[in-house]
Image (cartoon, rainbow, N blue to C red):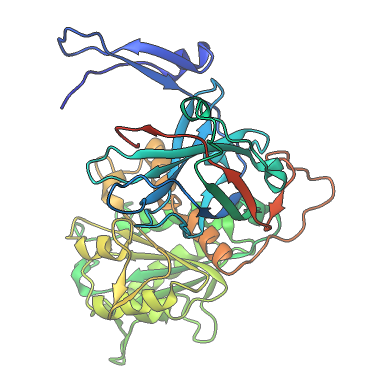
Length: 454
């Protein structure tokens, strides 16, 4: 149900100390409703905190059985309000639960401030959503290895024999420093930029002006526009500017069909020095080979090495989808990112499937370890067939949108740390780290009823 609306700028929120309360509009009610909005600058700290908790002798809340406990973690904002940021799984029918280990971003739990206290509530789950509060406690990350909090809850403290509502035991609290994408770049991460261009017949006769490979009368083909626009952005991440460049789906004069031929014509070395050399090799290949088919991605994907960014330019009519999915799933644990740029206005459903944003790619019952594909339809950035300065910026942003996270996911999964930076470099984003693996116990306070957990 619609409860009302509020239009407000971030500037207004911050100018009022980062917290405002405003009435909701857009609906007539007898009761005036308002909404509280809090804003806080996000700390760039990238640390992740690993926790493991268990409970001991928790209060019994169910009349016909034991409790079904779960934990809710709250961050204290600058305005001293608490907001729920994490909820554990429910452990059924026990007073001594052991919850699964979980990880949470430091900036989400405490905004990178390890002196800020964290609030934890322990509830007994109820099917109707009216979860019973078993108790609550607070802890400070910096002091977690010395945590001994007294139990205090007003209603139960009035009872002489009340001690606490059980104990929550922190069996693990480990702060894991997470390097950022720029940490790897600054410390010398070398990326290789590879290129694959579609030379299949579905692109049309390159001598006909309306087709996707036509270059003539001062006109650049959509392929050449995309190659130069995307390539000149990606080339800045390749230190030596030597780009292995391949074509696929072409037939040579001798009748041989290749799905991974070298654009430069050198059978021993596919590298072109500079993006202009790649463009020249592409134009030369159009004069020496015949567009043929089928459209097979897999052979080129299997060629790349090191941490490579593979740019694939294609009209989207893929012939070996099943094989390509299998190759991508197999390569998802390797240092590889694939950018597929769709040329023309064909049906790119298959490309969207390879891009695992909505659903992780799978093949033969195996799921990709991580998403390594980004699909970008080039035509969406063209205005009357041309790429404007603004649309070029938007294209670059879209093409590179997922590369940093893809590189980080590989580095973290393989525990690869950045090389040490020069002594002059300092990073004040996060305070000193604190690790605690010894058991930490906190008694729980009190009991009340909650109608909803967010």
